[in-house]
Amino acid sequence: MIFLNFEYSFEMLSEKLKICVTADHKFGTDAFLLSDFAGIRRKDIAVDLGTGCGIVPLLWFRQAENAPKMVYAVDIQPKAIEQLKITLEKNGLDEAIIPVNADLKDLSAHIQPHSADVVTCNPPYKANNSGIISELDSEKIARHEIMCTIYDVCAAAARVLKFGGKLCLCQRPERLADVMQAMRENNIEPKYIRFVQQRPDTAPWLFLIEGKKGSKPYLKVDKPVIIEGENGFSNELMRIYGKV
Image (cartoon, rainbow, N blue to C red):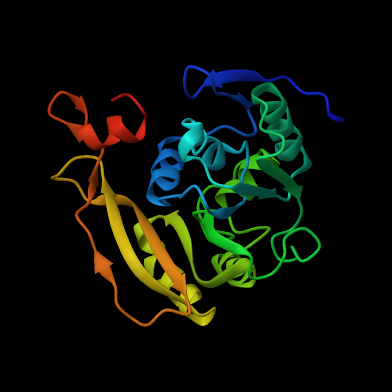
């Protein structure tokens, strides 16, 4: 049941799947990159922290035969959750994706501890009190560590992940040391990383990292994701967008 009234529209993610977007909760390329990077399997129970409009888990359902077993989509903002409910009702995914309106620092009443195979998060990129602060509360929460820090994200992931489960997130390169430290302090070992570059000759503007709960140290740095090819988007990005 929808309780809040607000203006929204739909964007198509595939021929059959559409997502509800608003000025407060929309999405960008980084959500597509993270959703693909997570490597979700059909048997997985997944948790998406700070889900916003739900773009990361929604992308896993573009092909129903490859979708995870269940997803908990968590956000502290009631409007984001109500917006996600509109999407789920529109697409008949009410039983596959569970909206959770809660603070990720206290999920015990909503998600069984040590039950998740995968946790994803597209966290706030900027530390609190850094950079230009948006006038919109929703953008403040999404972009700055006002409601949660990267440590909070990793601690929440550690509580819900099974032993050997993985945390996948994206972040700006200047926060790499913060992310790896927060992972290790919560018994999540950084295992795999890819940097994202606009072109082969430009510096990375994002990184994607996977950490495994309880794993031994060993970090693989893979080739970068390149956004632009010779004739527009790269072949890999076109695959991620579902265009090939």
